[in-house]
Image (cartoon, rainbow, N blue to C red; front, top):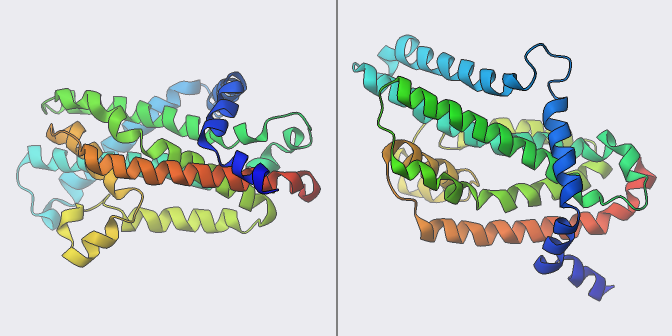
Length: 276
């Protein structure tokens, strides 16, 4: 039994297994993306329209409604805050989509679970790819807004994949863990929805991390979104290079989470069909 467990948490074995089933993953991911907009008039264009409308709302609220509260007099600063907020919400949305969808995945795809030969480990990665697709659509909307608002476009924008890359193994690990646990404990779905709401207000979305005291700033580093949000703003809005050392440490922790999540999923999958 120990040898089987060790094999399942072997990163090389895990990557080989995922590469073997990559075609199934890509097919299901595209089906998930386009299936979300099936029967709608505009179809997949809603993935572009929704963040565009939300950015417009953020810009209006924080340049008109909250102008006095934020003591902002310069229009450029007002629009800058809307962009800063949009970056934070976009990164939060990337993780929150994975968290909220993962617990019910096995119930949603019960027909696949009961197939002996189907690679179930692929299913939790579908919402990860779908969330990444919508994330980069939102980034495209952000780029358009930067141009229209007259803000400088920095070459560091090209480094955004470097910033987001360490988050991807974390998304995978969280998806595997929650999809396995959510199959046995249905309450996980409700807890996940509550958690993403709490995560929104304890992440540096509405405020910069350096606005907190030293003690709280250190605690914020344990928030999985803090580093990614702050570094995304650096490369997208401020034209600064990312902190490679910090992102490297994040990548190590993220990959460890992915391996543990994968191992737990593989151990738990044997009872999925019985529960369903």
